[in-house]
Image 1 (cartoon, rainbow, N blue to C red):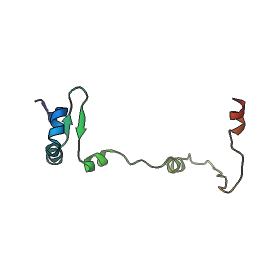
Image 2: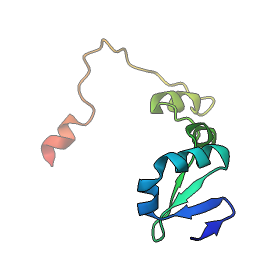
Image 3: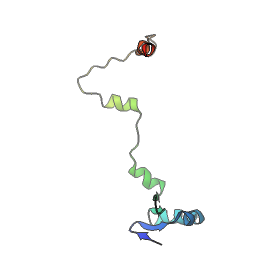
Image 4: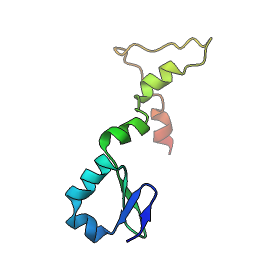
Length: 92
């Protein structure tokens, strides 16, 4: 069985048979690698969440990243304006 600096490399069949042990080792010893051709890594959720940036909604990102000095006029949600691309779809 091969090993790496971050822990043991498990075969898929071993991982199926010893999932509890792999989860325990991921908690106590760090990431556990599974697979030979395609490798997957088992880590604690806390560790994963620390490395993955939280995603904010697109609308919030757009508002927060609006170029300074640009006056953006938002239409009222109650307005009954026509769909902006309605006539383009009819001509296609």
